Length: 145
Image (cartoon, rainbow, N blue to C red):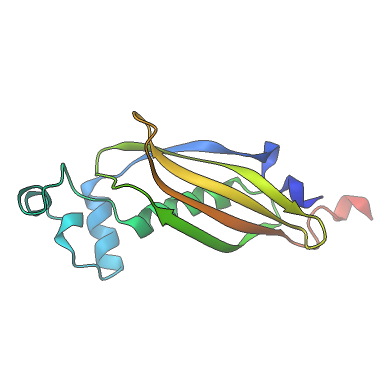
């Protein structure tokens, strides 16, 4: 198996998600994030002027890289990730995570995959990132012995 095979067809199948209030509250609690824009809708709208609760950036990143991890072939693993937030995302806005293989290094059996999260209705990117994926040295070798 080659590094270019880490992601079947070189594309991350689209993964849809809509963040709900309870999910944001639980993530805030788990990460000790006390900012009320993530769990108090009246505060987020009335004081901060947002349309709805804001989805935490790290929660978006978790979902992006979980979607990628779920799509990797057996024996491939994420070794590093980077992400950047580009626009706010509000609770209740449907999003989709997509991605594609962008670079392959056959010498190290690694590949780079670019990922993005965007609002389904508008295509507005909220978060982008990349991950280095390493293919385990043993992956795909059983049938080749």
